[in-house]
Image (cartoon, rainbow, N blue to C red; front, side, top):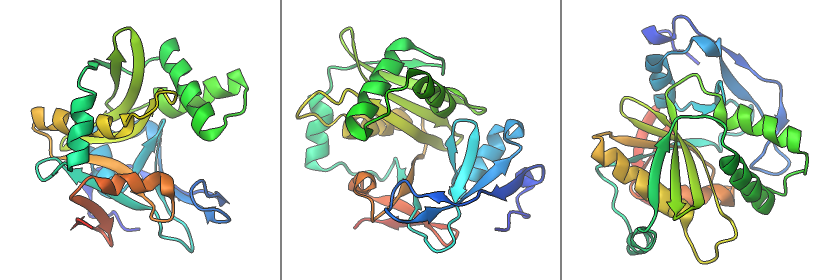
Length: 241
């Protein structure tokens, strides 16, 4: 992968991880291209990396680099062009009662409790408090770039937490978790539309949603927001299907 023409990449290097079990496609091995040294990455470099399809997890910035698979495709939404469906409009209006708070990244017990509740319901977490706490901090609290929490409250009840990275042209949605016990709600859809409106209010162009994987049902929701752009062969390409 050639980044030599980007001045912001002159002081960083890339290494390829060993193979590991893919989290998204069964019976597949995966590898990642990771940026190093991660502590020296500034906002300009981070912006350039996100535009090239990279993603942040904790302090690490990476991109899938698998030998025999190209299923992970970077996806972003154009804030200006986004056209909500009738269902999305209803969802946003239905959850309009939330109180929204923005906060810097720091450990909060109510966040952690909601995160565990979400993971245990969705992913059957192993009940090991210390391991879960370490993973939570490494994954969501540690960041070397400009990041923040977006909290969604129903009165005194915390319902949704979104972690976002702030870019010069938009935001990168790192992760969202929410109360999984609430039936007949669309917290994930609502939070994305709220972020789109937040970007509009701050005159930002894009929301980067990470990777779309056509073979993974958990990732298919990302193409419900139209039009969207996919990063293919070094270019962002608009898609409405």
